[in-house]
Amino acid sequence: MLKHLPNSLTLLRLILAFVFPFASEQYRLVIVMVALATEYLDGAFSRWFNLHTPLGALLDPVADKCFVLSVAVVMFLETDISWWQFLLFGARDIAVFCGALFVAWEKNWRAFFYVVPRILGKVATVFQFMLFLSFVGLNMIPQWLLVSAILVSVLSAVDYTYLFFKNNFYREVKDA
Image (cartoon, rainbow, N blue to C red; front, side, top):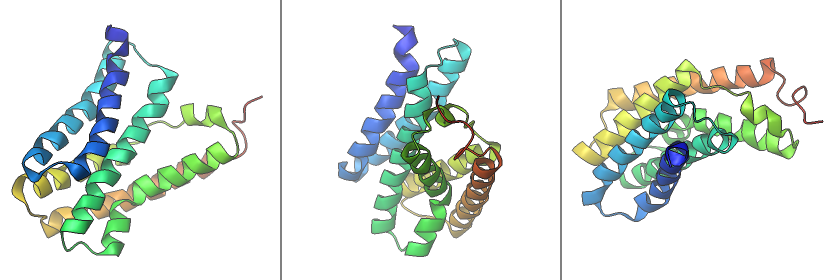
């Protein structure tokens, strides 16, 4: 039972990503808080109990991107965030998604398991969730928080793009 816990938490976050846009405002804070808890706990349980799986390594970033996109789109539609702020806010997720699409296009499946979380990516996630909590909990988006989240997201996108090219994920990690 315990061996499936990290992937179950990740699947819950994926489900929450699809539920969030349709949830009433009174449940949004709970959804974001549960997603935040699963974001932390799936990785923590995986590390603490040595429950790493290839499925989890692939599913976790997919669930992350889906949840961020879900909340960010709702935030964009319901606030005065401009389209360019929306794109910059999602820069890290867009960069990672484009890299993953390219690796999949090349059928370079092993490359997915060589991408490790980066500190700027973790910081970007913290700022994204702070912004989401402010949006759903306080019904406001402080400008300083939006600018900070955008800045860290862009820096993280640059970092992941550098890592992609530095490690030649598009060439050298091919399956035999």
